[in-house]
Length: 307
Image 1 (cartoon, rainbow, N blue to C red):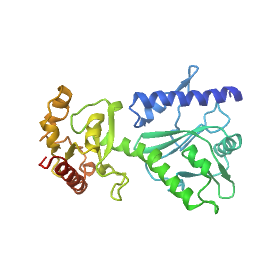
Image 2 (cartoon, rainbow, N blue to C red):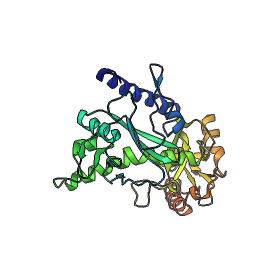
Image 3 (cartoon, helix red, strand yellow):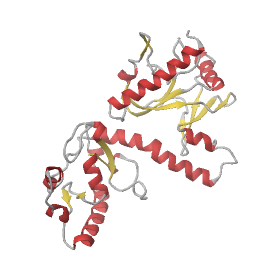
């Protein structure tokens, strides 16, 4: 077992390593194989346990990571709408629970892995366990430091203002990474318009903005787009019809500029987007119709013509 100083150094190195892996993988999910390859000082320390949701390496005195599985399990681990996770003790009184409680007592930073599909995870770190309830046999922690400052939403003193602010953090910092991971996976990590495959240059564009009541964070409300086409889409310079055809604003079609405009946008007009192979992940025609109607109105108001 490492010394206390070495343990903290390992945790900091894990966070550094995860930063690098997320950059390498375009910031949108890591596989179990990748997460099992971490090494420190030549010693391999997998960040996930193959048989359970808690990772307690023999070298460390407290828990290193916690994960939620893709499939249902006998535990009642849950994430509430305010971005706090309740994580149950394992059955019995074994060393896993001892190390979990020790992580809480020491304030040790750890990693929470959230499954986005079978065998693939988004890491949240550093996570610090805020509460331990030995009677109910669970711990609780926020997925974002800002949520920890607000306090536990189960507290009677939690106000409506705090709840609304927490909801905004959950939407922007917690739900969006999962949305991005699922959308980019559905489109095989390529832009639906131009087929660019560099994930670090891709976004998960909402068909209907998430501020809209219809703007759910579901893959059917998403399109994988490169930065150029996402920006054009959000600014109604480009749209997609319910029949999956690309339309470019008429005024933009008439402009004369360099090759970026010509090849990047004008030549996309009339093409069909590349669809996910999984039909259940394909963009909703109803949501596309709603967005396309906005595009048509804005185009008409600007140039008085068509699109």
